[in-house]
Amino acid sequence: MTYSYRTSALSTAVYNAGASSSSSSSSSSSSVSAVKLFSLTEMNSPVRHESTTSKVVHLVRHAEGTHNLSEDESKLPLHFDAALTPRGVEQCLRLAERTRTLDVDAVLVSPMTRCLETARLSFPHLYNRDDGVNSSEDRDGGGGGGGVAAAVPFVAYEEWRETVNYLCDSRRPRSTLEGLYPRVDFDRLVSDDDPIWSHYEGIFGCHLTHASHRESNDPTSLCDRAHSAWRALLDRPERNLALVGHSAFFMHMFTPLFPELEGVVVYKDEGVEKMMTESKFENCELRSVLVDVPHRDAGHDEDE
Image 1 (cartoon, helix red, strand yellow):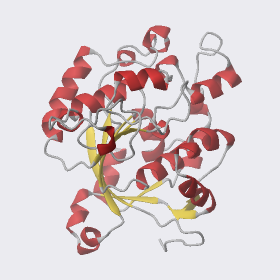
Image 2 (cartoon, rainbow, N blue to C red):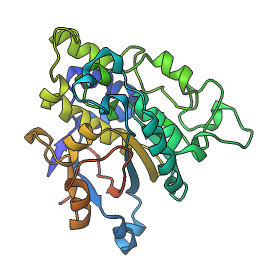
Image 3 (cartoon, rainbow, N blue to C red):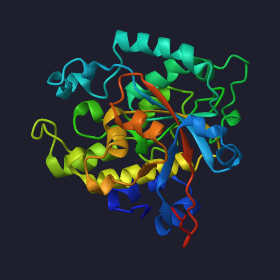
Image 4 (cartoon, helix red, strand yellow):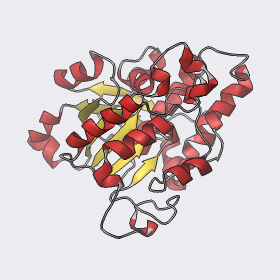
């Protein structure tokens, strides 16, 4: 099963613009194999262990946010770019005890406040470097760091944010986030204001005139974004990644509701399929998978 990265007006303006020019031009024209997911036990197989195209990805859903307390109230302006609750903070502190045992070379994170807080609190040994090095030049990708650096790159990606439906899914300006999280690289956010919320506000109106789904009723956009999200992850040079994201966006890829998103990922063993499809991600839940990076050379298609 193959697919091509999509290039709708929204994805070109918001997602592809954050990639390098060479990456963007090749991705939009190349056919690629579906992203293959394996159980981590597959690392023990000679083929997977010796593969240079495999990455270990630790997927984390954000901890409990204020919008998670009440479905009805979650749509209120009070929960704009929802932050963590005290319980959510506690969940992160518990998760931090586990993450210290993981090999993580970079932390990719949605630019929503609840995910940025989860990343900061759940990987404190990586976010709060204590070796006295404070130059942003030490961080892969650079930029947006205000002169301070984490022990590994913490990089925000618009592609991995939650489906954009309500004000809790609308993000703060990039300039505000840079001040709040100086160790996170926000260079891949192409505009200060929220371009995805603005896109759907232009179609449906503000939250007062439209209080229902927006992007969740737009499978073409979700398909575009899912493709771009995996491309952003797979283009990273690191082989051990943590990704802090959202339940609904994970759901659209791992147990898709729309035929447009079927085949974005393919499960290569029963263990990983069971883990990723039997239940939704709970707050601050971590699931680890082995991802086989597909070839993306123009005209090349893996025979599977």
